[in-house]
Image (cartoon, rainbow over all chains, first blue to last red):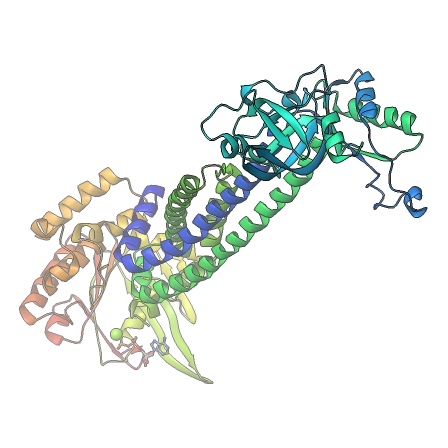
Length: 399
Length: 220
Ligand SMILES: Nc1ncnc2c1ncn2[C@@H]1O[C@H](COP(=O)(O)OP(=O)(O)O)[C@@H](O)[C@H]1O
Ligand SMILES: [Mg+2]
């Protein structure tokens, strides 16, 4: 038999039992569609996290006080000491490294902000002028923190804070009260929304020294270090460690690269996507079992036809090929329908959650269609074999 | 062309051997016209199935054109069925979802003949058997006589050397049965050997050679 004839004979017989064909296609397409949608969701979550990280700034190295790598226990802690603070001097010293282009210290506290009769609780972030560049933040109005006169009582408001305190009136140049001190508003942040736990819309940014006075402390929560290039990241990390070792006399800080954090998230989320996709693929094998049953019924319903084909000169291998082709066509049509379902689902999710970059990864689409075809064909081995081995005499009499 | 020597066919039923054919010796030459008669259960169908390579003898040898065909594998036997043997059944055995033309085309398609050649041959057969206006009808839209004409056209589409008909008039009324026998007899004039199983003596009596079977044996 010629390949074209095999295909058209198989497709004729599929079309003649429409309900059965549609049922099997449905089972297949649900499996394939599920793989597509679920992996698209997983991949979307992964890309979302990756994007969030890169919006934090690029080529970043983070310095934290205390050594958390050794399970949180340092010799100092055993003696009842708290880890030594990171100071502004430490932060400035990091600029000595030739791998470092900029740094931004961060210190955080919460305080009450008031303007006239209006007041609310806010998170106050103390930093320096370079924070804007290092953290890829955007200013909507005015200026950011000055790079000189670091002790000046000025502040930059988050978009939401500005709106709540000033409404439609201009905020620039006005004086607000933070705790028991007065600050002049010099800028307003652009609206960026949530970004890795920091909502800049509800933040008030002041110079580090002002924050220290406000909260009556001297340490830094962390230091953001921007390496000169991607290749300079390991060098910047090493330099930060050795500079702080020289200054503190012991290794009492934790230095991690943003890449390392990102890589961990990336791995976890990729594994999650794989797992979810794999579970969906298992539903394809359920479709396979269904196909096997329905094909077995088809064989017993078409015993006479099979006997006839043998009498007319079809060898056992030809009968097998015909039934295989039916299963393959069915799986193919089913998985194509599943792809369409899946892509429609992905489209709907993308519409409902525009911030989530959902797209099914090509390997998942390939794997879904491959699995569908493979299970379809695999589970038709037995029915096809049964058809091929039928005794033609008995088959012709319909037994 | 065909020679059966000491051919037997038995079936094991429980621990008993039931003989459907016993020590059959038979020669059939090209263009022979043979009728096989006998009571029900005498082994007529079994003999036909054996000749048609749908079944294998339990013992004895079957030569077709000098070749021992019982030793062939499935693929080779299928090739012989395709090229040399045509079947006509009592219950027509048409594929219900296929049109008359497609049913006639089936053996040609199974043999891997090109679509152009198939179309030409089917056209001739439809014309020969008066089915041109029924070409696109499915079997359930055809009368019994038309169905058997489609089956005969299908059986002859590969120009077989031997045509095996197992009670081809069994499901037809008398006059339609006559027409079908006329068509089959016409084929013997074209050097096709015809083996016709029937229990109607009036039909069997027309054959040039008449075989009577009883209890798995040829009695004369
Ligand atoms: N597959 C089979 N299993 C057991 N017995 C069979 C089988 N096929 C035929 N027979 C027996 O062989 C004998 C001949 O059958 P058959 O050739 O069909 O007779 P006929 O066609 O002359 O009516 C019968 O007794 C029948 O019961
Ligand atoms: Mg019979």
